[in-house]
Figure 1 (cartoon, helix red, strand yellow):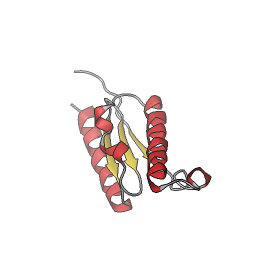
Figure 2 (spheres, one colour):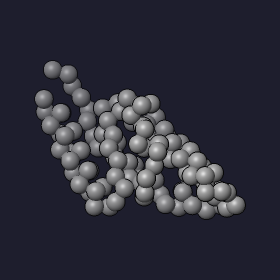
Figure 3 (tube, one colour):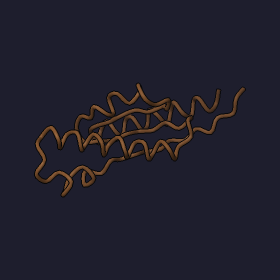
Figure 4 (cartoon, rainbow, N blue to C red):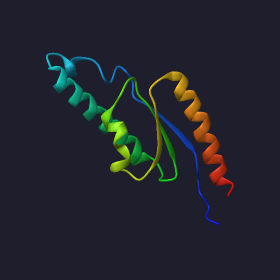
Length: 104
């Protein structure tokens, strides 16, 4: 039986990261593209620090194309939430799954 180091990591993109001077004067489309770029950069930063057996929980306010299509470019376990209630449920579920995998 393989030995896995499972742990749960929560990654939260701060709403302040997705606001501010970087978006002043941009069209709606350019602002959306800039937001997606910032989300991608933050996810990549988190993934570079995590082991492949980590369950990454991504919490972001609203919808993100980057999060929706993340599975096409990464080989990590991840789940996404866009409300605080969903976040709590997903973190609990992910911890339960990780614990079960660890005990296989």
